[in-house]
Image (cartoon, rainbow, N blue to C red):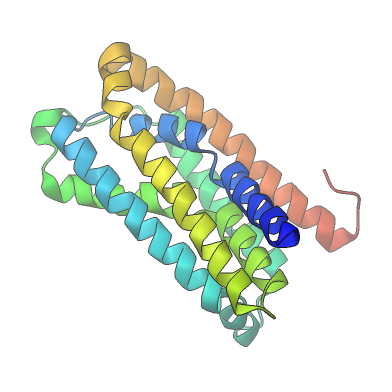
Length: 210
């Protein structure tokens, strides 16, 4: 029982570190800065379940699918890092701020929820790799796989709770503060994407981890 509890805590903390709810909440506020409170709430309620389903599907079939297409996890990490970097640059260097709330309809909220919130912010390459590794390590025991999924669901609930309370923070920092936050988090996200690429390159070249 002690081993199971230790494994459970390890899974939870690993996914918590990868999903990083605090940083993701900042990114959530950045990309939904042009939405009103109701639309921001709708975006959160769409983005988190969509990201959960994506990660769940990838956890079950991800490694098999990559192997079937002869794609290594290193290649996937590099490709995901590049996509994340492109999005981060658009956040940081884009001249246009968020669209006014009056122009942000339900369709825009749904679009923002799927991209970039669900993918690549929440269900990004780091989260996908983490869930594949956790499921791979526990594949011999079905109960351990269920525990991994349960820890993923718990982390997603934490993320959803922070997203839904993000409106209070948004009102405090205002429109200009959200624009500044968007650019700052773009820089952080760019650094994260570069780190993902460098880590994959180090593994490929057999160098020490960065």
